[in-house]
Image (cartoon, rainbow, N blue to C red; front, side, top):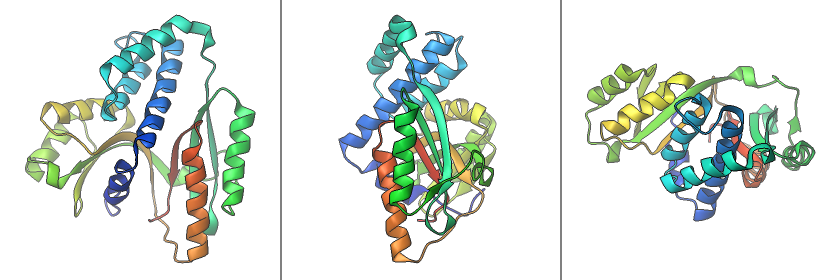
Amino acid sequence: MSGHSKFANIKHKKEKNDAAKGKIFTIIGREIAVAVKEGGPDPANNFKLAQVIAKAKANNMPNDTIDRGIKKAAGEGGNVNYKYVTYEGYGPNGIAIIVDALTDNTNRTAANVRSAFTKGQGSIGTQGCVSFMFDKKGLIIVDKEECDMDADDLMMTALDAGAEDFAEEEDSYEIYTDPDQWSAVDAALKEAGIEPISSEVTMIPQNWVELTDETAIKNLQRTLDLLEEDDDVQAVYHNWDE
């Protein structure tokens, strides 16, 4: 699983302004609403809600904000009309892109996503056209400078908690899990005093693609920027080796 570190890219994202954090909280708030509508407000009896709460805590969402989101969703009941949709397509030079969205207007979202691909000289494909190139995994990234634990001890702590793989990169440790085991491993690490720089369930490319053409890089970055600015977009995955 090793061979490509996401550390530098994640460090860059963490350094973005508060607007980025605001969008993350909005994204998680919608996920809380959908999870409560589908399975009720008790995370002990709603595995999906428990996972969203773990994601919220991994992104430093305050407990009060999480509780308010659950109570609001439980109170508004049928007013929650968000729907999960996924789009797949290609950027310049065949870069594979997956877009997860949560929307109350699929026509609006589809048009915005299609526009983002088109403006970056890419194209939307059919369902499944690129997802086979990715593996869904829990990924926990620990900054070496922020970690007091020895690498071997960290690896054993992660594996004992249910992790599948452990990789040591130049600046970070990367821990991979089955998606269903991610929250348990994340909790075990935090209980051991480890605070990850990033912890999420994500799509890991099986192979990474380099771009050397400046125009292609500029076009792909335009598509990614437009997608990440869209309030309906939950996550964007790609196999561009930045």
